[in-house]
Image 1 (cartoon, one colour):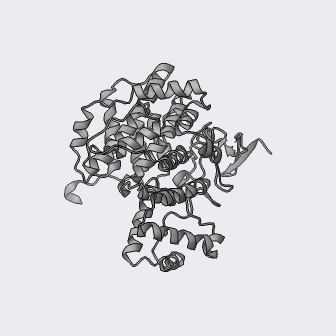
Image 2 (cartoon, rainbow, N blue to C red; image 1 turned 135 degrees about the horizontal axis):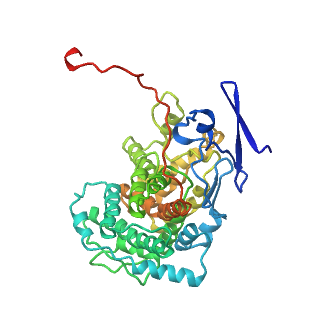
Image 3 (cartoon, helix red, strand yellow; image 1 turned 90 degrees about the horizontal axis):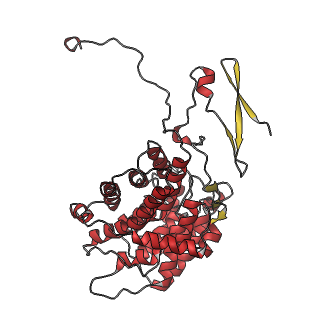
Length: 428
Protein backbone atom coordinates (compact mmCIF):
# COMPACT_ATOMS: atom_id res chain seq x y z
CA UNK A 1 0.00 0.00 0.00
CA UNK A 2 1.34 3.49 -0.81
CA UNK A 3 2.18 5.69 2.16
CA UNK A 4 0.70 8.84 0.71
CA UNK A 5 -2.31 10.24 -1.15
CA UNK A 6 -1.97 12.83 -3.89
CA UNK A 7 -4.53 15.60 -4.29
CA UNK A 8 -4.57 17.85 -7.34
CA UNK A 9 -6.01 21.35 -6.98
CA UNK A 10 -5.82 23.89 -9.83
CA UNK A 11 -3.22 21.75 -11.61
CA UNK A 12 -1.02 21.70 -8.52
CA UNK A 13 -0.36 18.35 -6.80
CA UNK A 14 -0.05 17.95 -3.07
CA UNK A 15 0.97 14.83 -1.17
CA UNK A 16 -0.57 13.91 2.16
CA UNK A 17 0.41 11.00 4.42
CA UNK A 18 -1.81 7.98 4.99
CA UNK A 19 -2.55 6.79 8.50
CA UNK A 20 -3.34 3.10 9.04
CA UNK A 21 -5.13 1.96 12.22
CA UNK A 22 -4.55 -1.32 14.03
CA UNK A 23 -7.52 -2.88 12.18
CA UNK A 24 -6.12 -1.64 8.82
CA UNK A 25 -8.48 1.30 8.53
CA UNK A 26 -6.86 3.80 6.16
CA UNK A 27 -7.23 7.56 6.56
CA UNK A 28 -5.74 10.49 4.68
CA UNK A 29 -4.07 12.88 7.09
CA UNK A 30 -5.18 16.33 5.89
CA UNK A 31 -4.02 18.40 8.87
CA UNK A 32 -1.70 20.36 6.56
CA UNK A 33 -4.22 20.72 3.69
CA UNK A 34 -5.24 24.32 4.29
CA UNK A 35 -1.72 25.58 4.92
CA UNK A 36 -0.25 23.70 1.94
CA UNK A 37 -2.91 24.78 -0.55
CA UNK A 38 -3.38 28.35 0.56
CA UNK A 39 -6.83 27.93 2.09
CA UNK A 40 -8.46 24.86 0.51
CA UNK A 41 -10.54 22.80 2.95
CA UNK A 42 -12.77 19.73 2.72
CA UNK A 43 -16.56 19.69 2.91
CA UNK A 44 -18.21 16.65 4.51
CA UNK A 45 -21.71 17.31 5.96
CA UNK A 46 -22.46 14.86 8.75
CA UNK A 47 -18.75 13.91 8.89
CA UNK A 48 -19.50 10.58 7.19
CA UNK A 49 -16.02 10.44 5.69
CA UNK A 50 -14.08 12.36 8.32
CA UNK A 51 -12.14 10.91 11.23
CA UNK A 52 -12.21 13.48 14.03
CA UNK A 53 -9.72 11.72 16.30
CA UNK A 54 -7.54 8.71 16.97
CA UNK A 55 -9.03 6.44 19.62
CA UNK A 56 -8.08 3.22 21.39
CA UNK A 57 -11.53 2.58 22.84
CA UNK A 58 -14.00 1.05 20.38
CA UNK A 59 -13.67 -0.68 17.00
CA UNK A 60 -16.72 -0.85 14.77
CA UNK A 61 -16.97 -2.44 11.31
CA UNK A 62 -20.47 -1.83 9.98
CA UNK A 63 -20.01 -3.89 6.84
CA UNK A 64 -19.01 -7.02 8.80
CA UNK A 65 -21.19 -6.41 11.85
CA UNK A 66 -18.27 -6.19 14.31
CA UNK A 67 -18.24 -4.28 17.58
CA UNK A 68 -15.36 -4.51 20.08
CA UNK A 69 -14.49 -2.63 23.25
CA UNK A 70 -10.72 -2.36 23.77
CA UNK A 71 -10.29 -5.44 21.55
CA UNK A 72 -12.91 -7.61 23.28
CA UNK A 73 -15.88 -8.73 21.18
CA UNK A 74 -19.28 -7.44 22.24
CA UNK A 75 -20.60 -11.01 22.11
CA UNK A 76 -18.08 -12.26 24.68
CA UNK A 77 -18.45 -9.26 26.95
CA UNK A 78 -22.25 -9.53 26.96
CA UNK A 79 -22.07 -13.23 27.76
CA UNK A 80 -19.36 -13.19 30.44
CA UNK A 81 -18.93 -9.72 31.92
CA UNK A 82 -20.68 -7.66 34.53
CA UNK A 83 -21.51 -4.10 33.46
CA UNK A 84 -19.12 -2.60 36.02
CA UNK A 85 -16.27 -4.69 34.58
CA UNK A 86 -17.03 -3.20 31.16
CA UNK A 87 -17.16 0.29 32.67
CA UNK A 88 -13.65 -0.21 34.07
CA UNK A 89 -12.43 -1.69 30.78
CA UNK A 90 -13.69 1.21 28.68
CA UNK A 91 -12.32 3.91 30.96
CA UNK A 92 -8.97 2.41 32.00
CA UNK A 93 -8.18 0.11 29.08
CA UNK A 94 -8.03 -3.31 30.74
CA UNK A 95 -10.45 -5.67 32.47
CA UNK A 96 -10.08 -5.35 36.24
CA UNK A 97 -8.92 -8.15 38.51
CA UNK A 98 -11.09 -8.99 41.53
CA UNK A 99 -9.25 -6.58 43.84
CA UNK A 100 -9.42 -3.69 41.35
CA UNK A 101 -13.12 -4.29 40.68
CA UNK A 102 -13.95 -4.41 44.38
CA UNK A 103 -12.08 -1.16 45.07
CA UNK A 104 -13.70 0.49 42.04
CA UNK A 105 -17.19 -0.44 43.23
CA UNK A 106 -16.43 0.61 46.82
CA UNK A 107 -15.10 3.98 45.68
CA UNK A 108 -18.18 4.56 43.51
CA UNK A 109 -20.50 3.78 46.41
CA UNK A 110 -18.66 6.25 48.64
CA UNK A 111 -19.39 9.00 46.10
CA UNK A 112 -22.98 8.01 45.31
CA UNK A 113 -24.79 10.34 47.72
CA UNK A 114 -26.35 13.25 45.84
CA UNK A 115 -26.54 16.58 47.66
CA UNK A 116 -30.02 16.99 49.09
CA UNK A 117 -30.35 20.42 47.46
CA UNK A 118 -30.57 18.63 44.09
CA UNK A 119 -34.04 17.55 45.25
CA UNK A 120 -35.09 21.21 45.16
CA UNK A 121 -34.12 21.36 41.50
CA UNK A 122 -36.03 18.22 40.57
CA UNK A 123 -39.05 19.42 42.57
CA UNK A 124 -39.14 22.52 40.38
CA UNK A 125 -39.86 20.43 37.27
CA UNK A 126 -43.48 19.59 36.47
CA UNK A 127 -44.31 15.90 36.07
CA UNK A 128 -44.88 16.59 32.37
CA UNK A 129 -41.22 17.54 31.83
CA UNK A 130 -39.43 15.11 29.50
CA UNK A 131 -37.05 12.92 31.55
CA UNK A 132 -34.11 13.64 29.23
CA UNK A 133 -34.47 17.37 29.87
CA UNK A 134 -34.61 16.69 33.60
CA UNK A 135 -31.57 14.38 33.49
CA UNK A 136 -29.49 16.83 31.44
CA UNK A 137 -30.33 19.66 33.85
CA UNK A 138 -29.59 17.60 36.96
CA UNK A 139 -26.26 16.42 35.54
CA UNK A 140 -25.28 19.97 34.70
CA UNK A 141 -26.40 21.06 38.18
CA UNK A 142 -23.85 18.69 39.73
CA UNK A 143 -21.20 21.23 38.70
CA UNK A 144 -22.65 23.65 41.25
CA UNK A 145 -21.84 21.17 44.01
CA UNK A 146 -18.44 20.28 42.51
CA UNK A 147 -17.24 23.69 41.29
CA UNK A 148 -13.50 23.07 41.00
CA UNK A 149 -12.25 22.10 37.55
CA UNK A 150 -10.47 18.80 37.07
CA UNK A 151 -6.70 18.90 36.77
CA UNK A 152 -6.24 16.32 34.03
CA UNK A 153 -2.55 16.01 34.90
CA UNK A 154 -3.55 14.67 38.31
CA UNK A 155 -4.49 11.00 38.19
CA UNK A 156 -6.18 11.31 41.58
CA UNK A 157 -8.40 14.23 40.49
CA UNK A 158 -9.36 12.48 37.26
CA UNK A 159 -10.25 9.30 39.14
CA UNK A 160 -12.25 11.24 41.72
CA UNK A 161 -14.32 12.98 39.02
CA UNK A 162 -14.98 9.66 37.28
CA UNK A 163 -16.20 7.80 40.35
CA UNK A 164 -18.35 10.78 41.34
CA UNK A 165 -20.32 10.75 38.11
CA UNK A 166 -20.54 6.94 38.11
CA UNK A 167 -21.91 7.05 41.65
CA UNK A 168 -24.36 9.90 41.27
CA UNK A 169 -25.67 9.39 37.73
CA UNK A 170 -27.73 6.24 38.50
CA UNK A 171 -29.31 8.12 41.40
CA UNK A 172 -30.31 10.95 39.04
CA UNK A 173 -31.74 8.41 36.57
CA UNK A 174 -33.80 6.74 39.30
CA UNK A 175 -34.97 10.09 40.67
CA UNK A 176 -36.04 11.18 37.18
CA UNK A 177 -38.26 8.10 36.90
CA UNK A 178 -39.63 8.36 40.42
CA UNK A 179 -40.41 12.06 40.00
CA UNK A 180 -42.49 11.23 36.92
CA UNK A 181 -44.34 8.51 38.80
CA UNK A 182 -44.89 10.48 41.99
CA UNK A 183 -42.76 8.15 44.13
CA UNK A 184 -40.44 9.22 46.98
CA UNK A 185 -36.82 9.62 45.94
CA UNK A 186 -34.56 6.74 46.95
CA UNK A 187 -30.82 6.76 47.69
CA UNK A 188 -30.29 3.08 46.99
CA UNK A 189 -28.65 0.27 48.92
CA UNK A 190 -24.85 0.03 49.06
CA UNK A 191 -25.01 -3.67 49.89
CA UNK A 192 -26.15 -4.39 46.32
CA UNK A 193 -24.24 -4.67 43.08
CA UNK A 194 -24.12 -1.69 40.72
CA UNK A 195 -26.89 -2.82 38.35
CA UNK A 196 -28.89 -4.44 41.17
CA UNK A 197 -28.93 -1.11 42.98
CA UNK A 198 -30.11 0.72 39.86
CA UNK A 199 -33.15 -1.54 39.59
CA UNK A 200 -33.96 -1.22 43.29
CA UNK A 201 -33.68 2.58 43.23
CA UNK A 202 -36.01 2.71 40.24
CA UNK A 203 -38.67 0.23 41.27
CA UNK A 204 -38.83 -0.21 45.04
CA UNK A 205 -42.16 0.91 46.51
CA UNK A 206 -42.38 2.57 49.95
CA UNK A 207 -45.03 0.11 51.15
CA UNK A 208 -43.61 -3.13 49.67
CA UNK A 209 -40.55 -5.33 50.02
CA UNK A 210 -38.49 -5.11 46.83
CA UNK A 211 -38.09 -8.49 45.10
CA UNK A 212 -35.28 -8.85 42.60
CA UNK A 213 -35.94 -10.57 39.27
CA UNK A 214 -32.76 -12.33 38.09
CA UNK A 215 -33.86 -12.49 34.43
CA UNK A 216 -34.67 -8.77 34.33
CA UNK A 217 -31.36 -8.04 36.09
CA UNK A 218 -29.42 -10.06 33.50
CA UNK A 219 -31.27 -8.39 30.63
CA UNK A 220 -30.53 -4.90 31.98
CA UNK A 221 -26.87 -5.85 32.55
CA UNK A 222 -26.59 -6.86 28.90
CA UNK A 223 -28.48 -3.81 27.64
CA UNK A 224 -26.14 -1.49 29.51
CA UNK A 225 -23.09 -3.30 28.13
CA UNK A 226 -24.42 -3.19 24.57
CA UNK A 227 -25.03 0.56 24.81
CA UNK A 228 -21.80 1.42 26.67
CA UNK A 229 -19.93 2.84 23.69
CA UNK A 230 -20.33 3.04 19.94
CA UNK A 231 -17.37 4.94 18.54
CA UNK A 232 -17.78 8.56 17.32
CA UNK A 233 -21.57 8.87 17.24
CA UNK A 234 -23.41 12.17 17.67
CA UNK A 235 -23.49 12.27 21.49
CA UNK A 236 -19.95 10.94 21.94
CA UNK A 237 -18.57 13.46 19.47
CA UNK A 238 -20.48 16.13 21.38
CA UNK A 239 -18.88 15.07 24.67
CA UNK A 240 -15.43 15.21 23.08
CA UNK A 241 -15.90 18.57 21.37
CA UNK A 242 -17.40 20.18 24.49
CA UNK A 243 -14.60 18.71 26.58
CA UNK A 244 -12.02 20.01 24.09
CA UNK A 245 -12.83 23.52 25.35
CA UNK A 246 -11.67 22.21 28.77
CA UNK A 247 -15.25 22.12 30.05
CA UNK A 248 -15.53 19.79 33.01
CA UNK A 249 -16.69 16.19 32.93
CA UNK A 250 -20.20 16.86 34.29
CA UNK A 251 -20.84 19.69 31.82
CA UNK A 252 -19.54 17.59 28.92
CA UNK A 253 -21.74 14.64 29.92
CA UNK A 254 -24.75 16.95 30.18
CA UNK A 255 -24.10 18.09 26.60
CA UNK A 256 -23.91 14.45 25.51
CA UNK A 257 -27.30 13.76 27.11
CA UNK A 258 -28.84 16.60 25.10
CA UNK A 259 -27.35 15.21 21.88
CA UNK A 260 -28.61 11.72 22.72
CA UNK A 261 -32.14 13.06 23.23
CA UNK A 262 -32.77 13.43 19.49
CA UNK A 263 -35.07 10.88 17.79
CA UNK A 264 -32.39 10.07 15.21
CA UNK A 265 -29.98 9.01 17.97
CA UNK A 266 -30.90 7.82 21.47
CA UNK A 267 -34.58 8.58 20.97
CA UNK A 268 -34.85 5.82 18.37
CA UNK A 269 -36.10 3.21 20.85
CA UNK A 270 -38.81 5.62 22.00
CA UNK A 271 -39.75 6.16 18.35
CA UNK A 272 -40.14 2.37 17.94
CA UNK A 273 -42.75 2.16 20.70
CA UNK A 274 -44.56 5.25 19.44
CA UNK A 275 -44.75 3.58 16.01
CA UNK A 276 -46.10 0.37 17.55
CA UNK A 277 -48.70 2.36 19.48
CA UNK A 278 -49.81 4.06 16.25
CA UNK A 279 -50.12 0.68 14.51
CA UNK A 280 -52.21 -0.58 17.41
CA UNK A 281 -54.51 2.43 17.21
CA UNK A 282 -55.00 1.67 13.51
CA UNK A 283 -56.09 -1.90 14.12
CA UNK A 284 -52.75 -3.68 14.58
CA UNK A 285 -52.44 -5.01 11.00
CA UNK A 286 -48.69 -5.67 10.68
CA UNK A 287 -48.94 -6.81 7.05
CA UNK A 288 -50.52 -3.49 6.12
CA UNK A 289 -47.66 -1.55 7.67
CA UNK A 290 -44.97 -3.75 6.17
CA UNK A 291 -46.55 -3.01 2.77
CA UNK A 292 -46.51 0.72 3.60
CA UNK A 293 -42.83 0.48 4.53
CA UNK A 294 -42.03 -1.03 1.11
CA UNK A 295 -44.03 1.61 -0.76
CA UNK A 296 -41.62 4.40 -1.78
CA UNK A 297 -44.56 6.78 -2.22
CA UNK A 298 -45.76 6.22 1.36
CA UNK A 299 -44.28 8.56 4.03
CA UNK A 300 -44.50 5.82 6.69
CA UNK A 301 -41.10 4.87 8.10
CA UNK A 302 -40.48 1.55 9.83
CA UNK A 303 -38.60 2.40 13.02
CA UNK A 304 -36.10 0.01 14.60
CA UNK A 305 -35.05 -1.76 11.41
CA UNK A 306 -31.67 -1.35 9.72
CA UNK A 307 -28.88 0.90 10.96
CA UNK A 308 -26.90 3.82 9.55
CA UNK A 309 -23.55 2.18 10.44
CA UNK A 310 -24.31 -1.54 10.25
CA UNK A 311 -24.85 -2.47 6.61
CA UNK A 312 -25.32 -6.17 7.32
CA UNK A 313 -26.64 -6.76 10.84
CA UNK A 314 -26.41 -5.10 14.22
CA UNK A 315 -24.40 -7.55 16.40
CA UNK A 316 -26.04 -6.11 19.51
CA UNK A 317 -29.51 -6.99 18.20
CA UNK A 318 -28.71 -10.70 18.05
CA UNK A 319 -27.69 -10.67 21.70
CA UNK A 320 -30.59 -8.63 23.02
CA UNK A 321 -33.22 -10.51 21.00
CA UNK A 322 -32.52 -13.59 23.11
CA UNK A 323 -32.88 -11.51 26.29
CA UNK A 324 -36.15 -10.01 25.06
CA UNK A 325 -37.56 -13.49 24.54
CA UNK A 326 -36.50 -14.51 28.07
CA UNK A 327 -37.95 -11.39 29.71
CA UNK A 328 -41.29 -11.68 27.91
CA UNK A 329 -41.56 -15.36 28.80
CA UNK A 330 -40.64 -14.81 32.46
CA UNK A 331 -42.89 -11.81 33.06
CA UNK A 332 -45.76 -13.36 31.15
CA UNK A 333 -46.64 -9.97 29.74
CA UNK A 334 -49.82 -9.84 27.70
CA UNK A 335 -49.51 -6.60 25.80
CA UNK A 336 -50.93 -6.01 22.31
CA UNK A 337 -48.06 -3.62 21.59
CA UNK A 338 -45.51 -6.36 22.18
CA UNK A 339 -47.58 -8.72 20.05
CA UNK A 340 -47.43 -6.23 17.19
CA UNK A 341 -43.67 -5.95 17.67
CA UNK A 342 -43.22 -9.71 17.40
CA UNK A 343 -45.42 -9.72 14.31
CA UNK A 344 -43.31 -7.05 12.60
CA UNK A 345 -40.15 -8.90 13.54
CA UNK A 346 -41.33 -12.15 11.97
CA UNK A 347 -42.58 -10.37 8.85
CA UNK A 348 -39.21 -8.64 8.35
CA UNK A 349 -37.11 -11.74 8.98
CA UNK A 350 -39.06 -13.68 6.34
CA UNK A 351 -39.84 -11.02 3.74
CA UNK A 352 -37.36 -11.04 0.80
CA UNK A 353 -37.68 -7.26 0.50
CA UNK A 354 -36.21 -6.75 3.99
CA UNK A 355 -33.85 -9.74 3.90
CA UNK A 356 -32.30 -8.70 0.58
CA UNK A 357 -31.76 -5.16 1.87
CA UNK A 358 -30.52 -6.46 5.22
CA UNK A 359 -33.14 -4.41 7.07
CA UNK A 360 -33.08 -6.50 10.23
CA UNK A 361 -34.46 -5.44 13.61
CA UNK A 362 -31.77 -3.44 15.41
CA UNK A 363 -30.89 -2.96 19.07
CA UNK A 364 -33.36 -0.08 19.45
CA UNK A 365 -36.21 -2.36 18.40
CA UNK A 366 -35.48 -5.01 21.03
CA UNK A 367 -34.43 -2.63 23.82
CA UNK A 368 -37.77 -0.85 23.53
CA UNK A 369 -39.58 -4.17 23.85
CA UNK A 370 -37.64 -5.07 27.01
CA UNK A 371 -38.15 -1.68 28.65
CA UNK A 372 -41.87 -1.83 27.83
CA UNK A 373 -42.09 -5.28 29.44
CA UNK A 374 -40.23 -3.97 32.51
CA UNK A 375 -42.92 -1.27 32.86
CA UNK A 376 -40.51 1.56 32.15
CA UNK A 377 -42.39 4.52 30.59
CA UNK A 378 -41.56 5.18 26.96
CA UNK A 379 -40.25 8.68 27.81
CA UNK A 380 -37.60 7.01 30.00
CA UNK A 381 -36.17 4.80 27.25
CA UNK A 382 -33.56 7.35 26.18
CA UNK A 383 -32.63 7.94 29.83
CA UNK A 384 -31.85 4.22 30.09
CA UNK A 385 -29.73 4.55 26.94
CA UNK A 386 -27.82 7.42 28.61
CA UNK A 387 -27.25 5.26 31.69
CA UNK A 388 -25.59 2.63 29.51
CA UNK A 389 -23.63 5.14 27.42
CA UNK A 390 -22.20 6.96 30.45
CA UNK A 391 -18.94 4.92 30.66
CA UNK A 392 -18.28 5.42 26.96
CA UNK A 393 -18.71 9.18 27.33
CA UNK A 394 -16.36 9.18 30.31
CA UNK A 395 -13.76 7.09 28.48
CA UNK A 396 -13.89 9.30 25.40
CA UNK A 397 -13.67 12.52 27.46
CA UNK A 398 -10.75 11.13 29.46
CA UNK A 399 -8.90 9.98 26.32
CA UNK A 400 -9.38 13.34 24.63
CA UNK A 401 -8.15 15.31 27.64
CA UNK A 402 -5.14 13.06 28.35
CA UNK A 403 -4.06 13.36 24.72
CA UNK A 404 -4.39 17.14 24.99
CA UNK A 405 -6.38 17.32 21.78
CA UNK A 406 -6.92 20.85 20.43
CA UNK A 407 -10.27 22.58 20.81
CA UNK A 408 -12.77 21.39 18.20
CA UNK A 409 -13.28 24.01 15.54
CA UNK A 410 -14.70 22.71 12.21
CA UNK A 411 -14.34 24.79 9.06
CA UNK A 412 -17.14 25.76 6.70
CA UNK A 413 -17.60 26.77 3.08
CA UNK A 414 -19.37 30.13 3.01
CA UNK A 415 -22.31 30.39 0.55
CA UNK A 416 -23.77 33.77 1.53
CA UNK A 417 -23.69 37.23 -0.04
CA UNK A 418 -20.47 38.88 -1.18
CA UNK A 419 -19.37 42.21 0.28
CA UNK A 420 -22.25 44.70 0.24
CA UNK A 421 -22.47 48.40 1.06
CA UNK A 422 -24.63 49.33 4.04
CA UNK A 423 -27.96 51.01 3.11
CA UNK A 424 -29.31 53.63 5.48
CA UNK A 425 -32.68 52.87 7.08
CA UNK A 426 -34.52 55.66 5.25
CA UNK A 427 -33.38 54.28 1.87
CA UNK A 428 -34.43 50.64 2.33
